[in-house]
Length: 190
Image (cartoon, rainbow, N blue to C red; front, side, top):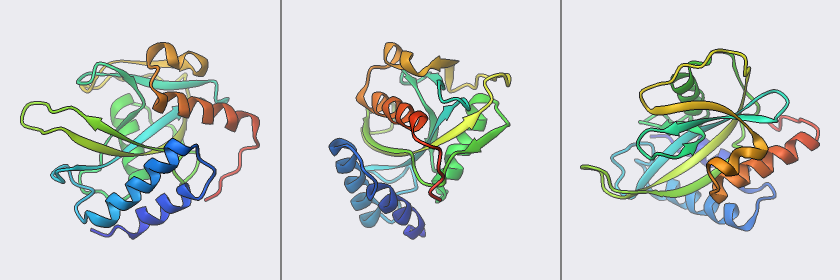
């Protein structure tokens, strides 16, 4: 599998001003991709790449979260690459499949955020890492939602209310970045 495009995207992301924790994770993910030719496949034993969609409204005041069925937590939408090397495309596909939304727009081709998190063992799947590459995607909050089998619920949540549903630092970081993007002019670096 061709890893050069995702390595270039990850290096572009890592070159941006990131907090220390995200910078360390970006470096870990780059090393992981460099050393695992099968990084896009679920069968990659230590972990695999995933693509996530941080879906926001045009004003950047709300985000669409899913109450994840298996993990029983409120999270951004996203999922496994399953061999697909275009993680922005994976994030867009997952956004459509998990929400029913059709009018989606990628804010940038460059990742919005990266995160590395441990997924607990479940059934025949051993404990493993998700090396999550996240993209900001804009959507119309008035478009009807369709809850998939992967979700218990979907909800547009005020950005300032995300911590009440999921206080994890990973979520808080995306909230901070969204709030900073609201203040700064919207420029697509891609």
